[in-house]
Each structure stands twice: as C-alpha cells, then as structure tokens.
Amino acid sequence: MTDLFEASGIHPPDAPLADRLRPQALDQVVGQDHLLGEGGPIRRMIEAGRLGSMILWGPPGTGKTTIARLLAKAAGYEYQSISAVFSGVADLKKAFEAARMRRAAGQQTLLFVDEIHRFNRAQQDGFLPFVEEGIVTLVGATTENPSFELNGALLSRSQVYVLKRLDDAALDLLLDRAEALMGKPLPLTPEARQAMLALADGDGRYLLTMSEVLFDLPEGEPLDVQALAGVLQKRAPAYDKSREEHYNLISALHKSVRGSDPDAALYWLARMLNGGEDPLYLARRIVRMAVEDIGQADPLSILVANAAKDTYDF
Image 1: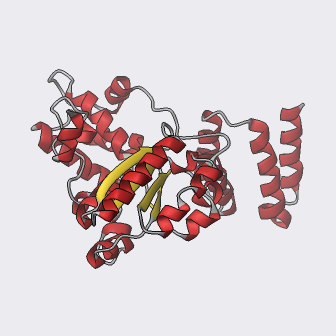
Image 2 (image 1 turned 120 degrees about the horizontal axis):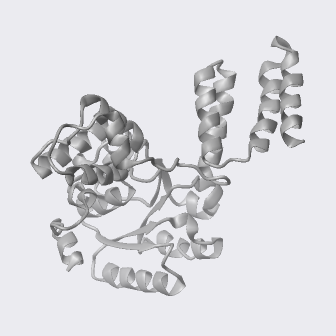
Image 3 (image 1 turned 90 degrees about the horizontal axis):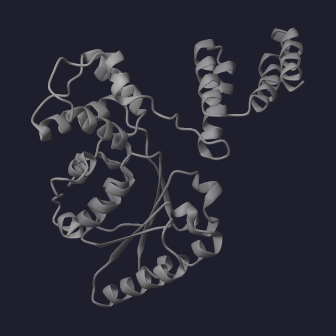
C-alpha cells in the first residue's frame, strides 16, 4: 500500500512529516541550486532530455534520494532503487535483468543505489558493463568521498556532483512548508527557531523530524531556547573517528589555526573531543601545526605543543 501512495506522489497521513513534505518536482528541492538551478549541470541534463550516470555525494538530509526519484520522473525513466546495505549480487542481477527487458520494450531505467560506497570493489565492477551498454543510468548516493570509496573505472563513467549542507535560508523554507502543511506555526520564539536551525546542522530530514515533535506538543506559550533544549535534548554530533567527517573536522581545525581564528579553532577542537576523538591524535596534530604554520613566528610554540603532547601521553 505504501508503494502505491509513493507512486502517485501522495503519502499516507501517518507518514513522517519529512515524507509528506518530499518535493514532487525538482524546482521544489531546496539548497542545491548550484546543481538544479538555471544553468546547473543536472538542470542542463533534464533540458537536453538525456541523463548520464552520476554519483551524488553529500551529507545526510540534503536530498540525494529525492533528486534521484525526481530525475527519473522528469526524464520519463523507470525508477528502480536498491540499497547497498540490504542488497547483494542476486538483487543486482534481478535489477539489471529487469532493466534489460524494459530497454527492449523502449523504456529507459534509472537505477538508484543508496549508500553505493558499501558495495565492495568486485560488486562495483559488476555495474560497468550495464552502464557502458546503457542498460541502466546509474545514480549512486554516498556520504563518503567517492575518490576513496569507489572504483576508478566506475568514477570514470559517472559525473560526481557534490550536494551542500542546507543553509539557514533553505532550512527556514522547509519550516515554512511544514507550518503550511500542518496549518499552524511552530511553537517557538524567534530565538528558539534560529537555535533549531543551528541544531539541524544542514540536515533537512533531521529538522523536519524535530519539527514533528514540536507540532505534537500541547498548545501553550512559545518555547524559548532553554525550553526547546529540554524538549529536543541534545543531538549527537556528526562525527566518525576514521571516515569522511574525521578528515573534514581535523582539516577545519588546522585551517582555523593557520588563519589565526582562535574561536573557530576552539570550536572544532571541542567538537572533535565531544565526538570521541583520541586527545593524543589531536595533540600530535597540534605539534604539526606548531612546526608547519607557526614556525619562526613563535619558536617557543613547538616546545609548548610538544610538552603538552608528552604530558598527556605520560
């Protein structure tokens, strides 16, 4: 029954708010104008009437799945999706065979592969002949750097498009749409609304999930920032200790020191520590900063940084 709702573009009334607000046309997708706006590369594909295989790389909640579905709709392709988390070789064979039969009947297939980086190298190689022959147009979605996680052969046959975290304007537009759908405003003061945008950290799905909690609250006075924190609690920081976010944050810390921005440096340092990073790793990196970026400007910096590292290690 859920599939019937989705096929018609209608979502059941008990579906999550994020699903009910899922865009029904590419023009309704927010925050990705560099790809979908006038002159954007994906927009040009649609206007030309022919899609090429692509990898959509971006953080969670930025619209990768939605864009793939709407691309198929706009181009008149049959949409088929699999998840690398739940699918194996047998599922891929079924998908390719179904696409081959559609092609024989004159129907193109857009095959959306969620979390494509979770397929191993051999499984990724299995896509190549079907992409080359045009049996499927592949749209892969990943939160990890494709250069590290995907085969070079697969990348050479696909365009990589980077989706951005949603900025405050895009997130605020999502809240406006949510309020219009629910027929009432969010019970928040202006300051609490801004704090909620910051808490979402560019993730539109998470923002709408939080909104659904607030819409279910009994009517009363608008919540201030402190009351909002009590209702929503604290979001776990987006961080992993060995993959993409690890390198993003350590790079941000290093560049903040290099750019002489102490507030930013302390923020990124605290975020990594709060996310569970090994302090010794950070101490060693700070020694490197003292050597590479401070140097003769403050010769004592290397002594202080190295002493701090040794003290912690000891």
